Length: 163
Image (cartoon, rainbow, N blue to C red):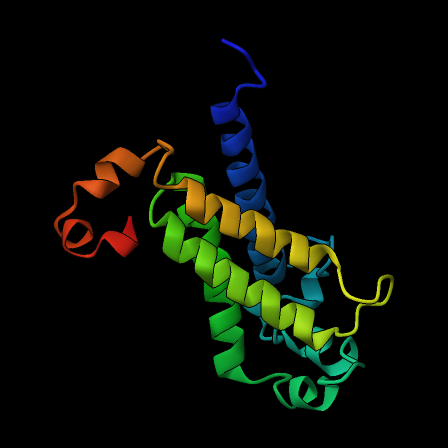
């Protein structure tokens, strides 16, 4: 079997993005000492979005994103998004919904930083959006881990968008 086969490359992309999302979730939750120090973790009561939203946005939409800083609902949506998108991609279930949700998260982060610092239009968040959209499109042709079992679940049969 060829390591660089098309299926392996799609799986590598899916699992790479899943690991990025899950790592961000656990680092912000537990303060693993990489992007988030232990005393700044969500588990000790620090908002996972406050630091970024309060200080990073300085573009066109900065005032809107500053106003969201430390909002509990925004924290829950952000952390749930990281966890659920990461888990769905890792397990190969609900790929289309996960990819659309991940794309939306990346778009909001992109907007919060618009215009990008190092390029007039494109940054890594746009690349993530493209990768999410490609995975969503490919999900109908790919057998990701638990994908075949997931497609047989009653609610998924009734609502194919969940596949």
